[in-house]
Image (cartoon, rainbow, N blue to C red; front, side):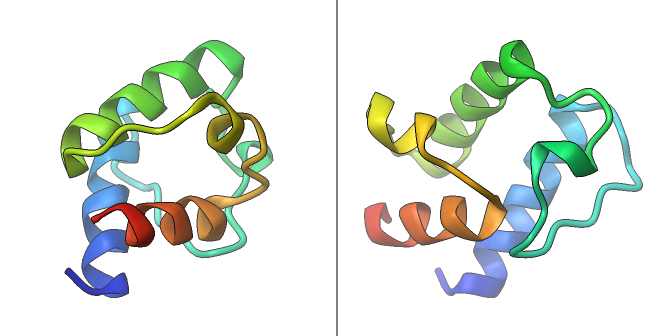
Length: 79
């Protein structure tokens, strides 16, 4: 799976979790860019990302994420 495929699949996960078909991710996307992305939804999102990609995050990885680009970097290392 290449980076573009990760973004496509991740975009689907975000749209599903936030119930918003207009979401289009890029490397700089943050929680400030998505209306309902709060701490509770962050946990739900990470669970869905783990499921979608068949990976597991550790707490340090989840807590230190600054943007979607960093999330993609972690996903790429784990798949």
